[in-house]
Length: 199
Image 1 (cartoon, rainbow, N blue to C red):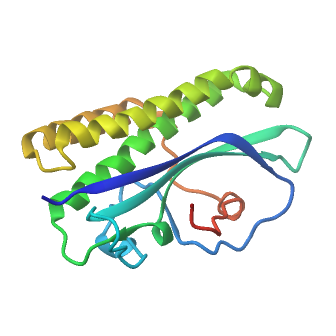
Image 2 (image 1 turned 180 degrees about the horizontal axis):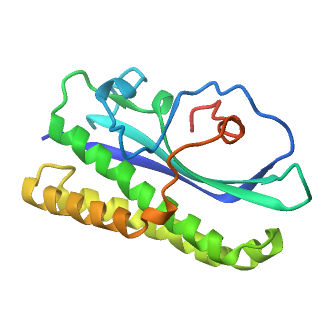
């Protein structure tokens, strides 16, 4: 049985960037409906001390930054796959890769949910802090959804259950289609920086 672990980095603190961050040392993939994960996206050499077939790092993060034209704080919400923190064994099945894509898609759903919340409730930094409980709740729900997804599908081995989950994920994404971000500006990309592998 092939098994995977999704390590989901849920960054619940806001990072405020007042400087231009232009060099990204780790390769990242921002979720896009037209690009699916491939095994070659898992860049780290296999760690033989683990019994799992792969580790996929998905990072749902919210970045706060001062907008240049005034003192307002703006927020970006990203759903990222971090290539340099993800690894796999050499020979893995297509169904496990589809399962890993499902994890990435689940993170996208919660990314959109947080974007929806921010668009409706965030006028400034203090308002966001007052309502941070909603944000934290979304992150907790996201993590629990990932755990349940692995448990119910047995890491993709239960084909019928896996197929049903993927359909539900697709429907959930469609319900928040208005909060899908299709492209990012150069400035938005520059704000992302992942330099160190997590401990």
